[in-house]
Image (cartoon, rainbow, N blue to C red):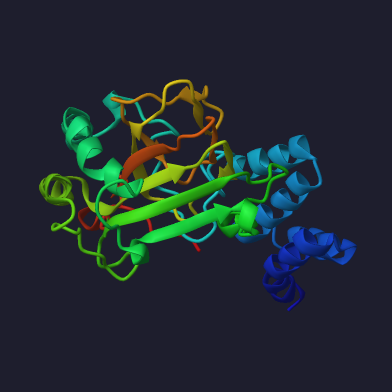
Length: 304
């Protein structure tokens, strides 16, 4: 009963800790860790508490120990909600030789069409040509207006800066209730997505916009294993400083014309600065190889 109570209390106390710095929250989380060291939710909550307190090495040690027992595959890959122990990750930035051929072909096809995508999407998204339905725009955070958005779940000492929007172009029926691609507004983009949907198990397509003069997206990750994202910078202004980091990989300097796959369940973060112009990226989400319906008969069930 004590373990059950502590498990349920931990996430709520973590939120209390973030907002008020309550010492009671820390006590509750430590008790939960003693009682349920095999719970991903508890280990995540305790590690994030340590991160907030500036004890990053202690948090990393906890995450590494958890990965060593099979709670996760990697210390930087910490999904809380769904995790398949028997389905190994391809790594934070999967190389071509670890990806199915259709994923490499999809990346090459999109890279070949980036100029078309840029010409069709960017003017609308930057309000320079035609209307963009506001119900497709989601502000992840806008610090100047007091909106921390996803920042409430970052769980690190790094605070969000600036503004970060996403505009959703498509989602499968299981994601966000289903969202058809707006063919009237973006016919060429939607045609391309239609050709790729079945091949790569398309879950979502969207555009990410980070705003000047400075935006920081702190480390964050998907709470569910199984989603690979293809990231494609569409518009990177000259003179901007734009970096993207996944796990402990070397930071990537974003440049137009190049796309790459990464695993969304790994920590990833962004820094961006430019005097006046935003950076615009296009992305698609797909099901990780090994986790499609035809694979489930061979995979051990997920753990919650």
